[in-house]
Length: 260
Ligand SMILES: [Zn+2]
Ligand SMILES: [Zn+2]
Image (cartoon, rainbow, N blue to C red):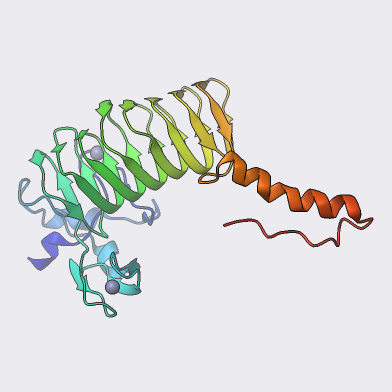
């Protein structure tokens, strides 16, 4: 029974995987159907996932960032460096839920779920229901129609095909992929991609934006490095220009290292 809470990241309703470490499609996961747990047993992972229990993953402490390896079957661990408790459970939200979530597992907010927690921190998040608080995760897949009042930040954000969202606060990510509809501001460290039939209405700050044929973008675009003001960018470029003009060998001229 301990394994009823085993980590899982495949939506039971639509069968889609939302883990960044999703199993290859060739792997058969059918065996887990042999002993299905009761439908409403838990908000945590609801079925045994043999594949996932077999593998381990590297997770980072929320407090001191120390990394450690944990088994796929573990539901929590203690940081070896600072002794902080680290939740590893997956959360599946199918109704109202308002406790704070901070897990290295995944969160699936189903279409009937209403997540009122002020803060949700997790590995990957699949958002199909109402999200009212802030979300911070590795990969966020949003397949929801409606208003999103909280802050969303993630490494990678996917606004899925059927999504139609209005984000009140700027969405922050390394990269954002728009396959559905979104209105709101995006601040991306690298790139924003608007796919065919995707549409984005709102201002974008990113290093690059790509709009596929059939995609729509309306808003202001600032191409630049996130976190640097215009003044800082100019200061950066001045020394490079000076050395370039004085040297006949620009290839060997010392160049300032890019700011990180
Ligand atoms: Zn689903
Ligand atoms: Zn720690």
